[in-house]
Image (cartoon, rainbow over all chains, first blue to last red):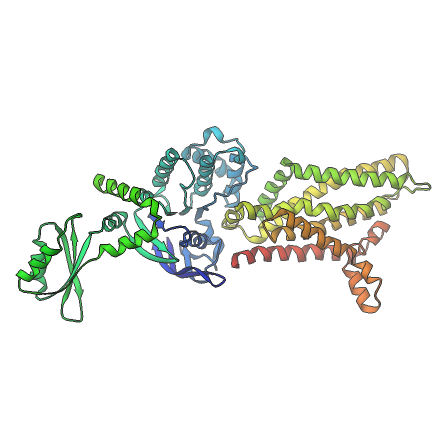
Length: 327
Length: 237
């Protein structure tokens, strides 16, 4: 549904985004995670055709966002980070206008406005001036205009920022319920939000993609011990069996044959176990040459520390742990 | 084209649901009203709008940019331009829609001054020809001024800047013929030919010359074109 290939964006000489490529399938919920200034909003602006990329291509539902812009834009519902709204308009008038410029007939708009107002729970305020609404309700109006024309692709830039905790929970549930029908791209710098809503996460930092995985895998990696890699010389099947026999090992993958005549084994483990010495002795007891043993989770944890703001980290890890225990 | 009318309708409603149109319109009516009274109470006054209509162009120079300053500057400031330009709408549809709304507001304001004309008919016997040409000229003058105003509004997110730039360009274009008369030869003709006021004289005298109509329409087209380009340029910054 969304294909981004080698996209870069320069503001003058400053590279805001460098050589990003990813794709999002139909009905998928993709989280875009990164600290402030990482290039999240710039990427969103390029996805929706507000900013053209300096190089590379963006395709929405098969249409290029630059050369076939109108067709591509027809498929998009967008909520920018700042939630821009015409403050002098009433909610229903505003939604009507947004629907009409997206090519909806007046009958269709009228019917759809009622549905959407129900979905975002704005019934009481339907005839209120947007300027008089609180931040949380404006956010809902913003989401309402984004889903109004039933777009295939929904791009939400930090949809829960600046609203109170109860509304955050409601908004997340709302967003989650939108998945399936819509292809969703959500940017955020809040880690638990990603694990609650998204099926896949891309972490972006300083304009580059630094990680891409499911929230579960990222949560596991965040805990430090996730996978251990071993380089061993010897018969790969027997070695793999010996490694699997170690208590706490959940999976062994040995598809990576290296030039040096050894095999690299990627070993997945249950979290919070110190298995390095037992793995080493298992290999050595079998009489094989152990060339390398490395815990690979650490580097990603470092990335995550860099990616998330420091004061968030204790809470973030707690939340992820809760999530892992529940799931 | 449909999008243009949707945007024009929304902007027109917005004009008349905020104080802008009323304040600017009221200013225009008060000022033109005062000069109309001055003009017809002079000794040997004739039953025409010629005296006040020349003043009206000056008020348009100052008031038109106040009417248009909000149109694109506010969208940029609020960020709503981002939603508008990511909707399946062409840039020129946005510009022309907004321009049409300001034109409607101008038309409504000018239509109130027809009250003066009514007075002329009640208390005198005016020539219809010069009245028609004067009002056609005034509307064209206003249309050109609004196009310049909306161009100024596209330049930044600051409405004050938009108004000042708009008034500045208009004052220059209106009065450049005063420099033209100081010069001689082709240069003088070219400079006078650019002047909005020089092209207005014939209209107020009751002479309808298509070259003047073409001049004002060219100003509209050129400045709306620059406006569309200016919006496009925002994306490449």
